[in-house]
Length: 327
Image (cartoon, rainbow, N blue to C red; front, side, top):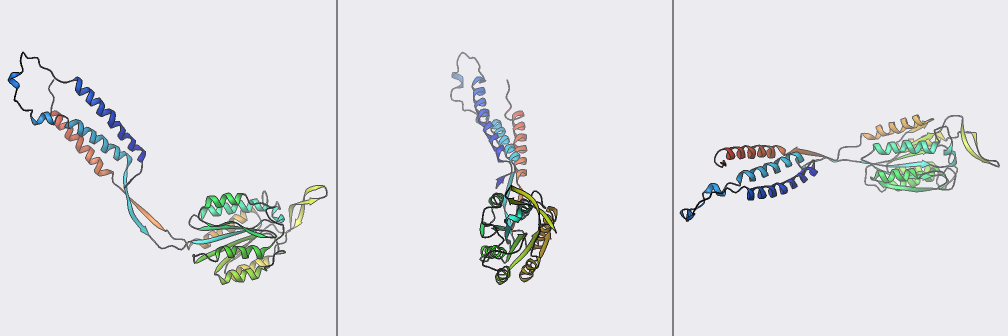
């Protein structure tokens, strides 16, 4: 049994001053009767009513205690229903190369991708999610975890410059596969987001895709960036300047990666489009989630409420009949 509002149980401390008040009041209101001699009363035994004169006060204390318990709302929570579930393990592979600083998505591609990915993580409460970042190299920013608060904090720290520049799509995908391949979950997913073409790393993207397929891992690929030219920060002899640079996404390879692994390729040309992509992936994978357990709570306050009512009624009856005090 537990209480919905356990702090109300502190009201039981009120019983202490009530008891003290009753004892003090009783000592000051003892009845007196002046007699020349009390010899005539020697040998007389106290009646049963004398011993029971404190019963109404005791009943009142018990009634107050019962009412306090009612306010705290006792509940039975030992009834559980467990259902088998198969959660999804997801690794987000995020490109953090220099081209991801392009401003066709606001404020830039990296920040837009991080914001939408955070929304996706927040909505996937039942899944283990990890984070891999890649540019010219790749490393794991966060292993698979159900502690999404830690994951979101690590996601905030992601930015350009953490690793050598370049676009190693194959290496990023292979690292993601390595993170999820040993998972006990039967449903394993990699969501790979990039804005370029593989130009670094010792692992070809399609080789990594074959590796993912061998472990039963679905890969959803996302090409992010507008079509044509995009304003991009470029280092020049006169400092950092914003220049329109061509958007070069290897959509063919990304489509093949998705096809090989049973996933799907998406193109996002703006932030809202990227949000729509993640929403579609969320819907496609949601059918695998089931409820792990359901708690049934049963309210138990009614017996205590009836007890409090009964105690109050008994006290009133006793005070006005058998235990009535006559001044």
